[in-house]
Length: 250
Length: 217
Image (tube, rainbow over all chains, first blue to last red; front, side):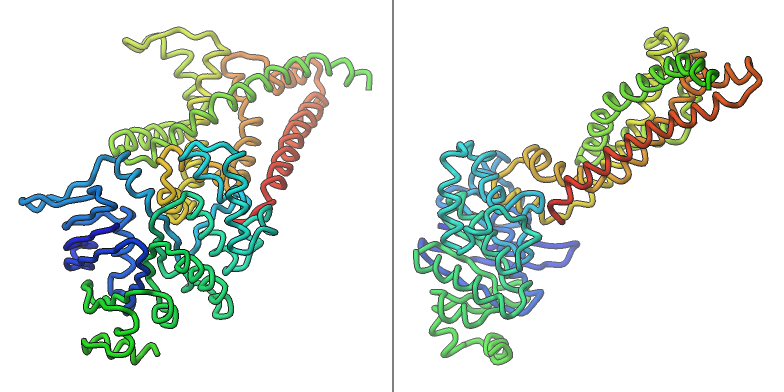
């Protein structure tokens, strides 16, 4: 569904992605792990054009989002086209980024109303269904500032799902949460995985990576060091850098 | 007491002029200021620079000078030279001047909204225009209420500057009576009128702030 080939990205002359390639198939749940500064979040943000790549090729469900020609010049699809392609991916952020001036329900229906042009009658039952799924139907009239971190993140997941994406990107979804609140978010994500949602999750939660994901990608210093099925990766990490990272984390 | 009742009529006439200048300036300068702010924060470098220059010019010279220029000097400027009657000249000067101040208030409000809000809107497929209209600007309103309240109250009092175009606003009407009747009572009444106007504004802004207090950032 997503094919990223040789993605390169620099920030102020520092190369943070040194040619990262990854293919994500339908129903895959891929956990991206690695030390901070390894480029894993940047890679995720490149996929949906929150960051602009300097080189490489991005194909989303067969449509080219960005490609690099022989002269090394990287071009994106025209803006409306790029926006349409990126809509196939929903995203959940570390810091939730809910809209503070809207209630929980308004947060969820905003994009379906303005972007998809759906009617309120059509989207509200769906939004309520999503809220029931993440266990927050009773909070639909509350403003985000009244919610706990875990509740905010579950609303953020529902908000992304309301746009009916084919792929969900999670950028360290539990890193800003108190430890006792990570469970509820991980449960929601696990539930999504069981429904065969295609997911790419940048995470420090090794248990989630091991138990839920189908494949684990270990990144370090802007490259993918090792990418293998989750069970294999944790039982027998091949690369010394992977091994030392996992020893640290577990 | 009789004297106060006697001067009340002419002072109310002056208040009407004051309120006209105030309301027209608000109605025209707020949208213009918003437009300027949006250009100022846009990625169009040249237009943004032009707006910066405009704001510098308008904030860097006295409002009274701008008013005198538009009334007396504009007719002699080549190409755009037009002669405006006193009231429209005052409105144009006030609007151009206050739009610059409002633009800076809007700009600071827009830039105080974090990058995460833009990113969240973007990954949901919203265009820049939709993001501004639905996500950023509604949050800006809450953030700029206190500085806007300040600026609006200043405007009420700045309207007294139109006396330089020989218009009879509240303060000029009062001054005329003081000089005619050898009593300072008209000043006291005029002060009371200004206080009532700013009280209404203060109350209005307080109500708005309360309404926006339903959510926290």
